[in-house]
Length: 307
Image (tube, rainbow, N blue to C red; front, side, top):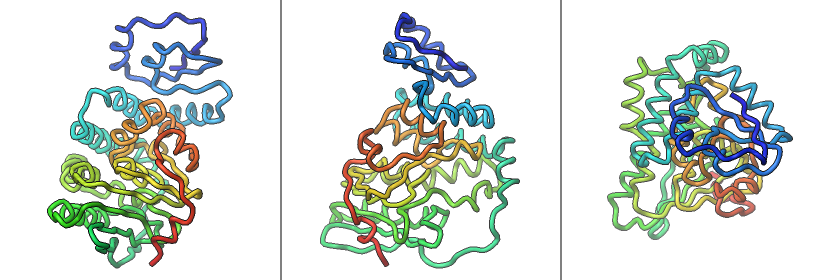
């Protein structure tokens, strides 16, 4: 539903915002000028009339209405949930959508490749008290697959148990930190319920949150989906100027599934997270810093992670 947000409109009653949480559709606010704050609580995403992303948002909502509505409902409850509860809610929504018609249509149009690249996905080094983790799948832009996930979870568990590790730094070899999840693996679990349980048992996001030690993430190149969702959980995010950030999952008939509805909302708020997700638009490092998704911009961070 599209709502025109004129500056002269009276703010809605607080009970309207409460009732809005159960509406089974996306509320898009379109602003001509300043927006009365109360209206922001009623909208799932807010754009100005001249925002070039507005057309993309409306196209994505029309093409993927089930995924879009699911995302809106999920984001509406983020402020009421703990991190742990948010990860459970996101995983459940993601798993349900993987059994839905929109994801099935995307998967049919994008069949997985049969070939598999071998080799380790992660290199670990100790530099005094710092554990340095490097994603080592550059030919696939460090796409996060099950093997990389498991190697990361194990490395973070060891770091948590080792009192000699006082902090962690991580980045990725090649042209990107992490370009998102491995699309070839999407939908390969035998059933959504099993996928939900496994996602919670082997959650990189949960491992990052539970690690009570500072973590610095170095971004460069395309950082899509899980590449930015996981980074947003860490203490400090440093981005190379060539960093590109996006949440493309809506185009697959899905919602962010690596913790993005939890991590990004805590850094940049619900409405900016919704703008990224519903538009699937790409932002640069400077915009990421302006929003609070990036803490610092430093040139040459990609060279720190060469093989």
